[in-house]
Image (cartoon, rainbow, N blue to C red; front, side, top):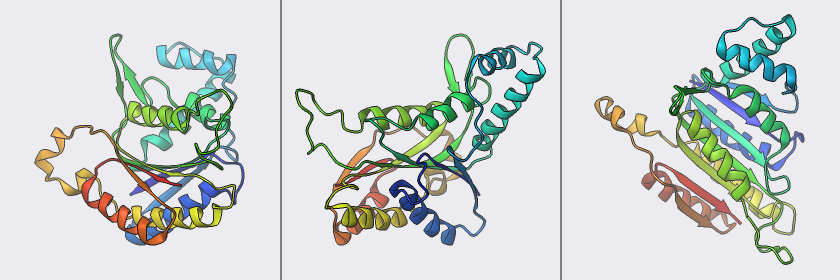
Length: 257
């Protein structure tokens, strides 16, 4: 099994990376054949998505001849896309930056998410190019909706998780699990981070519907809406809540506050 782990924080000791590592450490114990491909968007040599890259994109899709520089850029794009194409599972660690995601993650998406690489388009409708059973996304922010905004309604994680969830499904991820962690930059940080690490390790026991279902029924898989499981930062509550979710949900959105 091959897992693509995408890290969106530039800090090696970031909370999102710490929680992802807790999941991977446990998952590695359960999947002895696991191969982890780590893609840190800040350490990767991502080409700029500039005029040259856009030119390569159009020519790459149409099959038109490229310049040497465009060909080099397109080969980098194809290589990034191949890391998604080769993955059986995805794990993403995404911190909140100004109520959205880091710009380097968007750069990765803009580069790799190309027609006939990660999605299809027949002139009438879009479709996924991938068939990845499961993705885990860890979202992290320092505060929560308790910290209000003068004269504005807080968007919460809408701008962050809404897009990432849509994009994963767009390219062909069948099941998306989200672990949302709040209060990582205040007096609750120690408790919430530890609870999140426990929860992430527990999520490593998740099985996909393809693991659970008979082979004859796999073609009939349908997308279900997420269930929301909220918890307080106490290890006992987090553990029992996770176990219930593991048994009952194919998709889950889990928030630790």
